Each structure stands twice: as C-alpha cells, then as structure tokens.
Length: 143
Image (cartoon, rainbow, N blue to C red; front, side, top):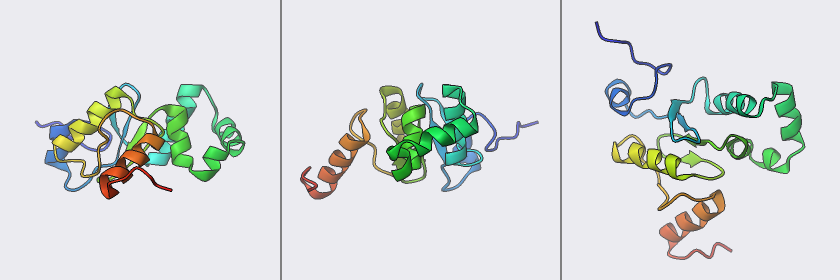
C-alpha cells in the first residue's frame, strides 16, 4: 500500500511533483529544510517565531507592535526573527538568505517547482532588491 503524501507530509521534491500541479507554498528554515507552509505562510512563521524565541503569541504581538519593521512588512519581520524564507510558485519573501536556504531554493528552481528569480548568491533583502533591479533594468541605481 502506497503511503499518503499531502501538505502535512515531510516535503519531498519528487513526491510533491507527482502530487501537486502548479502549487508551491513552502518555508525554508535556517538549516535549509523545506516545510509546507501549513496552515499559511504567516501562521507557520508565527509558530516558528514563538518556538525559536520562546514567546507566547501575546509576547510576539507586543514585540511586533513596538517594531517599525513589523508594522511596515510583517512577513519580512517574521523572516528576520525566524531567519526563514517564505516561498510561493514565483516569488519569495525574506530578510536574508543563507547558503543552506539558497541551495534549497536553487533545488526548487532546478526541479521546476519554483519559477521566480533566484539570487546569484546568499544575500540580504537590500542586496536582493539591487541585484534583481540590475538584472531587470541593467542598472543597480534604483533612486
């Protein structure tokens, strides 16, 4: 009997490709492990932040409310406090990408699951914006 594979299974590129069509919603944690973003990217990241920092949900809410970065972009702030990367079919959200996460993102791209831009190396969000802009427009001068 074949084992059931779904969003609650351990992520596996080949099994994912055989089960889902044009669907990718995952989180890449600091060690490069890919996890399904269940029940959602934001909720997964909240739970990860609580676990990693030993916060209650109320403590996380209070800390986030006092941080302007969280007010401006909550997902990027969650990436900052968890060191995780959110991935969808064709885009990513992160604060920084380390080598392990970068390799996992490249694996997703080379397997045909991720269709977005993969940075040339591990980098911060600011460096990514400049690199992507330069790739798209031939200059890194945004302003």
